[in-house]
Every structure is written in structure tokens, then in C-alpha cells.
Image 1 (cartoon, rainbow, N blue to C red):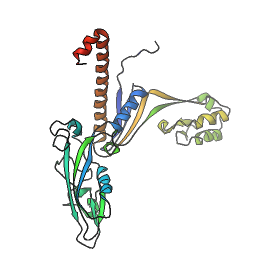
Image 2: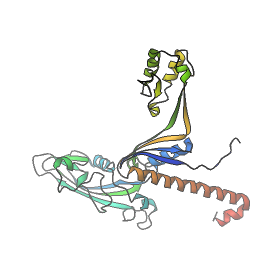
Image 3: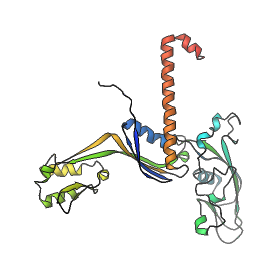
Image 4: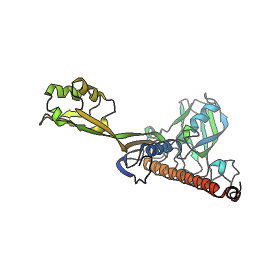
Amino acid sequence: MEGASYQRFPRVKIRELKDDYAKFELHDTDASMANALRRVMIAEVPTIAIDLVEIEVNSSVLNDEFIAHRLGLIPLTSQRAMSMRFSRDCDACDGDGQCEFCSVEFHLRAKCISDQTLDVTSNDLYSSDHTVVPVDFTDYAGYESSEQRGIIIVKLRRGQELRLRAIARKGIGKDHAKWSPAATVTFMYEPEIHINEDMMDTLTLEEKQSFVDSSPTRVFDIDPNTQQVVVVDPEAYTYDDEVLKKAEAMGKPGLVEIYAKEDSFIFTIESTGVVKASQLVLNAIEILKQKLDAVRLSEDTVEADDQFGELGAHMRGG
């Protein structure tokens, strides 16, 4: 029946999983759900980032605003971001955003006392919460100088000094890109490729090779044993239609058929390091569920108003 809806049970198959990278298949759902998941991962999964900077001393070549901007873009480990409060909603500090429930305090003190340029990096930021630190934070003890380098904030020469206090708060990428936990999130339709073997057998080896070479990416190849054109990597297909145009130019329309599976997607996720890629997906699913619950609640409220009229609105305090 056109327009009818039914319950789906999406399936996930993990292909590759690292701390900052994930690749998985999402089956038995549609593009609206896949794109909603992608957008939530980019813009609505909360993280922690520096949001307020108080400069005490700055005699470097960079002005205060420049340094504050660079500090805001330093990724901070955000495993506890989901349990933190937004500063605007925190009742412990009346929305001031400077309490243990909604913020983390950082301090930085650096002064160059030699003729050698001093690199002030994210490793020089000291946090009031050991669980919220710059992503590449390492202890100087036991590391070679090449392994100590964090994200450079500013460079100091002899006599120059930088002292500051910074407050990190919870936020989402929709408000500012510094809170986005994802470097990139992409998905593609899983391609389904069918070769017309009978029609392919009518081609010469040179024509087969010409057909294979017409694809900008290595989707097809010729089997050295059978001399048949085979699909070697369907996911390399970029929906450019070059092989379809080549087949038509050869007078063989229908030589190959390529479809996009409308209920199957391949996701590629790269995290900035503030949370693990796997946790990023789980957090996004949890937030998406919360948003859907809010929609259901809103629909129930509208139905109550329709049924009870002014009485329903009065019961809600309207």
C-alpha cells in the first residue's frame, strides 16, 4: 500500500574498528535514517572544548583573541561529556558555567628564559579533571623530545611569557565546529553490479579490456584463466556511469547493470580523538533515540489537545 509504514529492524556489520576510525555496514533501513545518523554524529554528539579564556600575562607575538581561538580548537578527551550538564542548564552555578558539574578548569604558565625558541603546546595545559585533557596529552617523564610535542599554541622568545586560565564546557557541533567530535562521517549506497555474461561473451579480448579500462576506478578486471570480465571491487564504483556509457558506445546496452541498494549503506567515520569512533556511533544512536522520543511525546500532546481541547492545555499549564 502506497504511503504505508512498517517497523524495520536495522542490522550493523562492522568491517574495521580502531580508536579513531570505523567502517561498518548498515542494512534494512532507508536513506533518511542513515543521513539522520550521520548528521547527529557531526553536529549533535556533545563534547568538551575550551569556551572561556582569561589572559593574565601575554607578551608573545600573538594577541589575546588569537590565542583564545587556538585554545578553543584543541581537542579534549570527552568521555564524560554525555553525563555533564550544559552550562546554560546548570542549576549548581546558575548558568555561570564555572562549576564541577558543567565545566573543567585549565591553567597554563610558560616563560622563555633561554635564547632558544620555546614551543608552548597543549602539553602545557594543566587540567583540574584528569579525565578531560588534550587528546595528545603525555607526561614529559620517559618520553623523547620528538614524542612530547603536542599541538603548538604559540612560540616564545627570551623574556616572553604567557599565563592564562581557561574554562572548558560541554557543547555540540551545531553551535560551533570546535565541539564536533567527527573529522569526517560519510556513507554511500552499497552498489549491486550484474554482468550479462552472454552479451559479454560476444566481445573480443580487446573490447573487454577497453570496457574494463573505461572505469575511473578499479571495479572490473579480466580473469587471466577464463578471460572473463569479473567484478573485483564493487565498492570502488563511484556512480559515475562511465562503464554504462562505454557499453552503449560499443552498441551493447545492458552489458552491465548497476543498482544502488536502497536499504544498505556503508559508513566511514573518522573521529577527532575526543571520543573513540565506536563510542561516537553509540552516543549518536542514543541522541537520535532521545529526539525520536521527543517527537512521540509531542504527537501525544497534540492528540490530547485535539481530544480534550482547552482541558488538555489547562492540565499542561497552558
